[in-house]
Length: 260
Ligand code: KIV
Image (tube, rainbow, N blue to C red; front, top):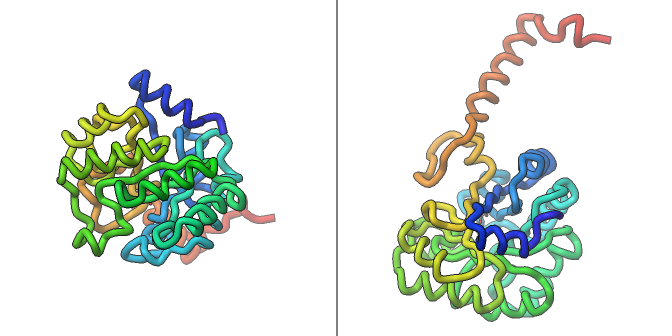
């Protein structure tokens, strides 16, 4: 790892944007790392983009560790963040510390991320005190989808600012701001000294994160407003598969060049 929490703090001080991408396996990690992102988040979004679930809730610790281990051993430069899955840190503080520790000890992550503001400040403090860097995540927190009444933009300015301040005071080294109006994200980014990483939170955050499949257009169907596709791999892959079928059926593939 060449990117550390100090690198990220300096980037915020110097107004240099931090770029974060999720990754879940060998090729996504290799592409993100060699592409030069600063952090790779092994997000519990894998429940949706790898497992095809409709939320992140079913994802387990074992699944997160499996994917984090692959990403950690692949990436050479980026800081690797393991995302703590639903119910791995909410019920018991000792379980939370032990589960966070597993991401570093067994899966080679450099830090963990967990969702929530004021309500998880003690969890952030205890995990940080155990020597494990913690990234907070406030605003639209997908593990609370049912409590929020859906994946909804969060607009309570006072609560959001308070959450961000508490997360910083508890010892987090950075915080994800998801699904909040750009003007509130700007106020938060100015108020706290740790880097804010936005997703659906406007351009004033200290950095931006996107899900790998969203950023590269591997998804078809509904695309959230905050996503920009920087490539259209779904279209490319669909074309490639049709061509493969066509050439096998026509006898064009394999040709002489592909035979021993
Ligand atoms: O799980 C995830 O990928 C995330 C990001 C979208 C921030 O939490």
